[in-house]
Amino acid sequence: MVKFHGQLNSTFGALAEPTRRAILARLQAGSASVTELAAPFQVSLPAISRHLRVLERAGLIHRSREGRVHRVTLVAKPMREAAEWIESYRAFWEGRLDSLERYLDSMKEKHT
Image (cartoon, rainbow, N blue to C red; front, side, top):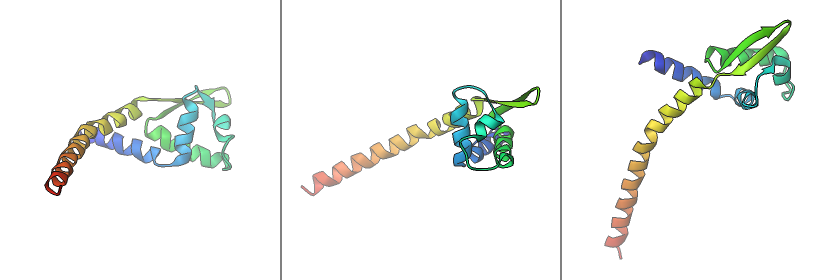
């Protein structure tokens, strides 16, 4: 269980930054070179490389080399695990909100 939470922490930490989320969104269309990923951003290539290292440590991307070109591919599993973790709390909060709604309805009936 500790490993899962460590992975979850890494995933959420990596997803917390807008540039990294934009990189992942771009990778949904398919693999890309580091230069292609850097193109839309007004930051240096070393800055993009730092973002990619964070994503790689979180297991969200895979880097490979084709000659001198570094290709980056999306790895969906950690995001799927994060989505499942969030989903596990949805039922809890929906139950709480349903309870609140019933309470508010009962309060309205008492005051009418």
